[in-house]
Image (tube, rainbow, N blue to C red; front, side, top):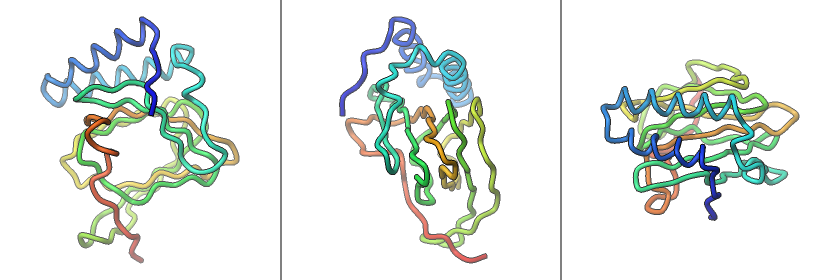
Length: 173
């Protein structure tokens, strides 16, 4: 998975974000939120080739990564959906374009969860959380057009395949 070569502005922003990992969790999440808000307001800073996906499913394009963080552009084709999942690391995301449905869940066992909240996210939305959980959610593109979100995760993309800790089946409820 090739990492894009960021502009000098983006490289400095990502270096600052990577350094913020050593600060207390609240300060790190604030830095991640600020970085996402800046990228969402200035999409021209991002390599446009990293904002393109396959015609089906979810495409993950690495934008930046260190031993402490991974920043991804996620391109959601229409009907793309994640499983219900939680994360083993910090998780922040912002919506660049399109709309995404985020459904929150409550675990009822180690394998099943019930829906508790359902919200449509619009461009400019940013959320950040630590893995203090349970923080179970599922994200889906219900729209007719591709959606693009930018994600900041607190893990080394070279050491772990993804930020997902566990997936759950949806229980009736």
